[in-house]
Image (cartoon, rainbow, N blue to C red):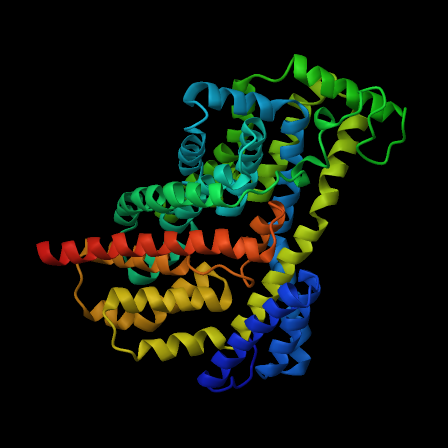
Length: 494
């Protein structure tokens, strides 16, 4: 949010930023404060230290928290509901068995990665991660291997698609601001993304997954599965607030046993998984038609497609459809479905508030002027254009935790220089991809995705740094390197 005040000198703001991050890590890792308490405390301290007017601090804090949860809260909630429906119906086992049966156990991480590349082309990272996570966990449970061996390659694939492929917001923003041909950006984005993912996401991600073995979390499944309990189905513990012998409990146990005998088909499950993809594609397609003048935004069908394809609405429709297809149609009672969905939300309360607090911290860093101070200092360095663009976006990404802000700042600071360079369309597209790579590096405690992945996979902050931060940084560097090579080759040939 915009605040009318005079920011501190650039050097002071940089020191405050470094101190805030160091304090946050100390409170979480050494003092063992809860992440929520640590993030809110450091956000308040940073706001005061950077000179944000006292009367505006609460608005900044609540604005960052509310905006973040407004974007991601419903997505997470509907995502875990959908995952719970698939798991309870036996669908996760069906999908994992089909995948392993087709490609074999050794190629399961590669298969998950390729599926994620396809799924992530048009779906925003957070939404795609929530839809694909049940499949990652199902394969990990089936093969009893390292959780990260199956999650990291797929998650890296989703990330590189979000980073480099329109219509994702960061890359589209970069292309628009620099006046690049979006078609060329999409073409070369794919050329850059695939080798970057294979070398870093698949090979490096698989290696990291084998090095760090984590237990498979139950957070998306509302607690441990009945199948894994040592008790019999007659005396199994209830899933939620039902008591032993209650109708809900008896029906839940019967349905779990039935799901083993008569699970849903692979075709049904794939149709449900791709339902939000189709809806979101309708949104994307109609939006592009409006922008190109092919269709009017006043048309009712355009408005309906755009509404139904909005990510929260698409996931809501998917949950309602899955509740019928995997629940009601298969004989599950309304009370059991309601109890199951209610229980699926209980484990994610901590995830939601911590993700929101991460957005709060990022908003403070943005409002204080820290990002502008860092980028302005680098702008005067005289570095080669691709290197300067990468560093501006990387520093902005590390400082404020926002891909779009990082790209917007980079284009704003160096846009005049780029325009005066007389670049051809391929070079311009390559620079857009360099910016995309820079904007994706160094995700840490001010990045909501950092907390989303760490919390849902039940990783500590240290483990999230060692895996996700390192992997995504290497992925961004790889994208920038391949894009720079493209830039250099286009310069030689022009």
